[in-house]
Length: 582
Image 1 (spheres, rainbow, N blue to C red):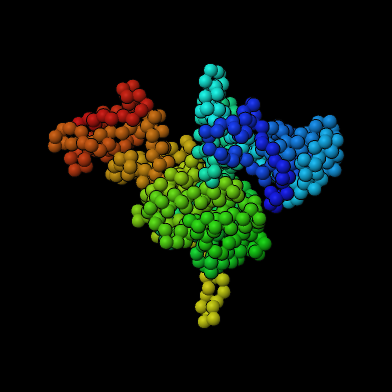
Image 2 (cartoon, one colour):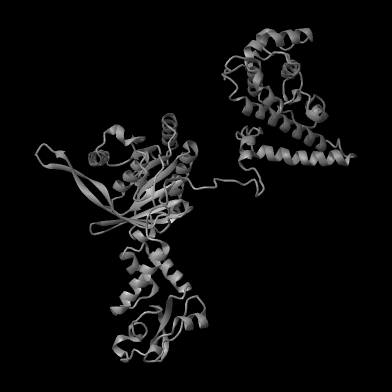
């Protein structure tokens, strides 16, 4: 906005405050009070009037917020009043017509005439800012009113009027609040107060309607949320799996690893290893018979932003908005986007998470971090423990010989948590170097995929039956299992993650098909601390499930284990804890 303060008419009258309190600022109104300039914004008033003279269509919004008395300068009140009268009469209000109206009313010269009206329209690009500027004019007027009532109360003006005294007390409270909200310490309220108040609108339960459905990029694996992470130790394949997942989205494939895929636009920040990433893309294209154009809406950024540098974030946001919109912004890796940061410190990491939140809010895109695992991969990402709590989805990668597993360790909304995808990396030869040696990279090969909601997979009953059969088979081979050891065995057998296997066992217990027995200690004839699982209806003898093998009696009596009816009748369908028969 151009500085138009120099063009304000020289004759400026004292403002008349709302509710008749204008005398507080008039000379002699309160001689004991120190002289001070009331809060106001000449520039905001000029912007509103100039925008109205150029765009009469903005009048409905402005008229709902402002009256002539809200303006600080008397001249501005006269101009606003003339504009309002003409627009209410259905007449156009521009520099010429408003000038004529003011001339007819005999006040044209006092407001500066056509010259000042013309100056008001200078530098006004349109009505984009008229709402915030009108709110600023209104808030400054309210602040002036609060101060005026406060000053009158101090002077004893309302001593015999309890109603006005209560109004003054409320005005004092509002004045203190507005002072505390000032950005620059001048006593002026925050011009964005109304916008911020909208953000914290109080609503009823019936009005509260956030996103009612989870939006997926890959159903059951990757939701379009605010913040997610794919992490794993070095060599786990995270920088291969992430592009493979995202390229399925940008290419518009129907499925990835058996899961439904939604088309997405992706911006991938290659913060480290740009040469290696280029080779991965070449291998992917060669393996799928694609050109660069065949990768779809997949965009790359080959520089690492510093998540603790607001200027870097500003520049990144500006470019993403210019080239967007994007559904997912991936940063590979988090460590490279935090140079010289203390990943274990809450200060640096909370600042990085705040930057990710800002990136999401500004672009509307999910922020997906590719990160390293800690020394103990089972405890999540490397660094500050608070990071895990901020994630909406967390995919952990592990490596066992040539096999790699992607486990969905956290999924805040939607089904899919504890699901697991097994994959390998296949080598692709891209050519030869100057010495004639092959240049290679790798592509992802999905080996096994766990249950997904919408794929052709074993039913829940089928998986429960498989768990029962596996437990019976283990028992027949002399291997007893607690819930923890069997969950690990079931996961290795491909029944899903350990949590999922544990869930199957609890379902079988609830149905009375599996019992949990406490192993007796034969030396003391008391129960030990460890519970063992037993499939009800199994043909295995008692020594295979409740008695130490080295002390078992050679009997396969029918009474060496309870029947299904006995388990259910005595303990119900819940987990059973009972000593085995001697």
